[in-house]
Length: 202
Image (cartoon, rainbow, N blue to C red; front, side, top):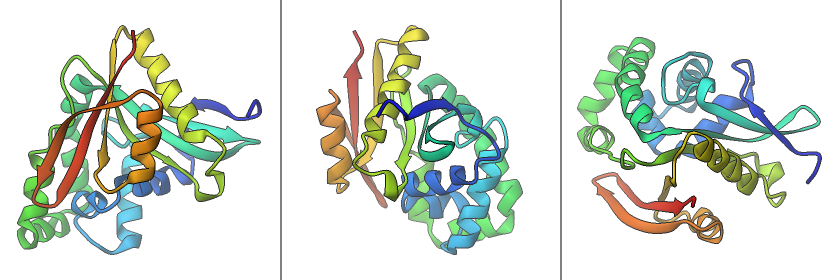
């Protein structure tokens, strides 16, 4: 474990968009406006390499071992996450244009679920995405990344850390509970069913 280290993410990290794709699950289709996996990854890749969007490397931290990326977490205050919503949409629209619009015309329930999603409260520091490479499972990488995000939250003066988890992601739910997160609410949308979880950092 002592050889695993965490550092600010690099925009050139090839694993960045893949890890965001893993973390987002089916929500990635609505964001990218397609169910074609290669287009989804390309779109998330543009967001990862860019700035001022919720899925940018600028808000991410990577767990590495021997220079190889094992996992990634994006984290920020909820207030910043909310401010990034519109710039993120503009970047998605620029990348996908009519493909994004057409997809949401065909799948209005996904558009509604995404646009009305409220992930946290303004007094919280939020873990937006978290994912680990399949080959790194069992090494405690997820726990290390969450602990790192919580350290950042404390340094910025936050007393609460929040995240969301898809209802049927039992493995992640158990990990978050083990780390001290508790369910504080539910998100029930036409195409999303999630728990909101919060941990006190004091």
